[in-house]
Image (cartoon, rainbow, N blue to C red; front, side, top):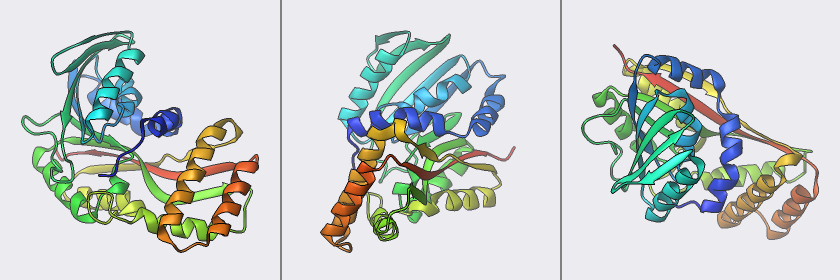
Length: 281
């Protein structure tokens, strides 16, 4: 799987958290509200942003297994969680922390998810979750993941999956060609085979529904404005680099687009979707 720079993950965290669909998060909270504790597996955990965005909806005692292929990200996740928590102490496997009255037992697992779609092992957790992961994987990987999820009869909650609906404002002449090239690049192999990109949530919903799951979806777009200038600039640079790698857009066009986007006091909406799925009873 292609890695992500810690600076990018930190930059996007606040926007990720405010963009989640509040109704799906509330439904997740109601599902587990009678439970005194919960076991959660977070796939592609990065710096632990998904834990910080989800913990408040879950029971008072939480056991988190953070799974990622990158040992540096996992190490940084522990440091980041410790700095965010009200209290924290290291353990041999991770961290014991408290936050707003909740107890968080955090463990780490370095794992190649491309080869192990069922990255939770036995016993199965109560909840499998991920953020900004499933648009990077292949159709075949999703099929294997869902088969493992269905066997384990686990609740599934994933957020901020790319849906290919990006709109820049004000409009600029090169927007369409840049968007087409970026989406083409998005479909390249990110370590899991050809990425499914914006079709991920629809495929997840279809396959889970077929398996008898109750599936709920909701949009969770980034709505970026002038106060998000740093993130917009990083997004522009990321698009430009991806488009260059396709070789389909002339360099002068890319440079003009980047200059226009960074100069404009504009806005951007980046489409994402959240999905929550409950196994059949």
